[in-house]
Length: 183
Image (cartoon, rainbow, N blue to C red):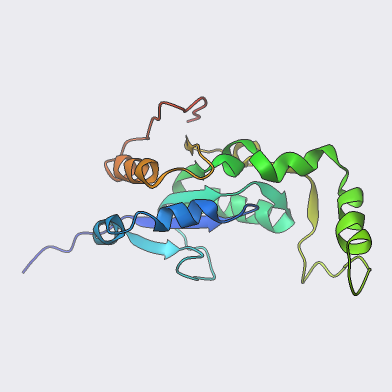
């Protein structure tokens, strides 16, 4: 009888960003098949799993923390993940998403829902349907402890492949462009 080898549980999360990092992940192309043999994807917008599970080995988090739902998800990820990787420039620095920080939240909401509205120019206030916007878009490490940073807008498939292989070998990936590392 063959021994059952437990594959590492891997999650990917999409916060306030464009999904470009996930698209770059998909650009691993045939290497996705090799990766699928080594890991179990337990949460991801790619897999459309709705509840973040406990005991995740590696979580790649794309996007800045922009609203109350993002903040809650970030804390859930940290609580249930062995390694959390800031995945792309929005997660590592705030990048384009944080360009809104020079404006007040009220100004942004007025512009989006009143000034630029074609049909209904009212501000939504039902935060069960629309997340409450935070005062600023923050890089992930301003909200939770992060174990490594994978820079790029988006990171290249080769960088993602390198990072995943390092993590699967139990090593924190170190990149030539890495400026910060906590842990």
